[in-house]
Image (cartoon, rainbow, N blue to C red; front, top):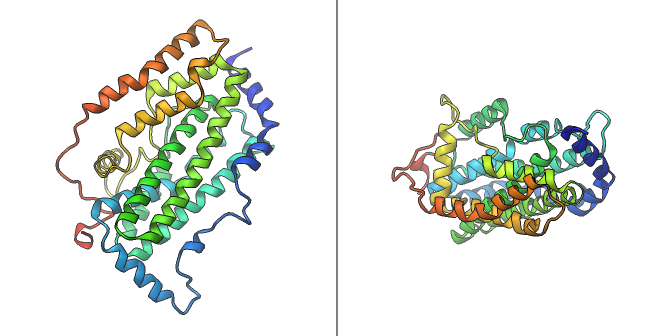
Amino acid sequence: MSIKNVRLEVMQFLDNKVDEFVDKFLIPIETIWQPSDFLPDSQSDTFFEDVKEIQEIAKDLPYDFWVAMVGDTITEEALPTYESWLMDVEGIDNVERNGWSRWIRQWTSEENRHGDLLNKYLYLSGRVNMREVEITTQHLIADGFDIGTGRDPYKNFVYTSFQELATYVSHNRVSQIAKDYGDKKLAKVCKLIAGDEMRHHHAYCEFVDQIFKVDPSEMMLAFQYMMKQKITMPAVFLRESGEKIGVAFEQFSNSAQKLGVYTANDYVDIMQKLIDKWQIDKIGNLTDEAEKARDYLMKLPGRMAKISERLVLPDENYIFKWVQPALVK
């Protein structure tokens, strides 16, 4: 049987468990929080006073913080791209609406709240150029993305396991910075979003764990493949108005590294967490090729840590069109 057919067979086998995954890792729409729960009520007599309070507190937050906020917001708002990509993965059938397509739709609906909430907060804060933010968001959705997984479900689930934990780290750090500057409401918002990301991380890790039980060698090879080529962030094609793809993302990554929102050390740490979570050292019944892949994976965090120690960031600060330094400290 071909590798593709084996993957389809495994996905069909696990499809019977998707309802269980939905109940365990997703929250019913009627009970989960919504963006309006944490924003000024436009129907309230105190709406303008509440907005003014947000804007006064926002003045104390520094330039790099707003760059991180905008980057996180744009990444979350590109959800249509991520959903359309995952719907094309082998074993996910939105035409017949199988269990996996149900998962993707419901996962996307939860994630969609994040961009809605952050976008509205940015708008009300008065700290950013919303038109430039909107242009970048439209570019990112129009340009799409290529995370190097193809239609392979094994590789895609490694990617989402990694990426959900990375977004947890980013939102959680932004929450802490907001708290340190006295913005308790924004800190709570980012903390809630981080909580969703962690819950989703556990879900995708569970999918990989289930695959390891039934197809260990191919899952090991898929894990090795993704770690070899490195995990590409969803916003890798990020660009500002009038700019080419690549410039804004590189500068945003440098800014996030300097601020400590997401660093090279975090990348290595997430890699090690996945190795530990899936107990890579204990998986049996591997082919010779998969055994070599396991050896490579076990040594990789140490090698990557040494590389990250040599990382040198540029001294100069890039000025994004999203945020005017004159408007913030």
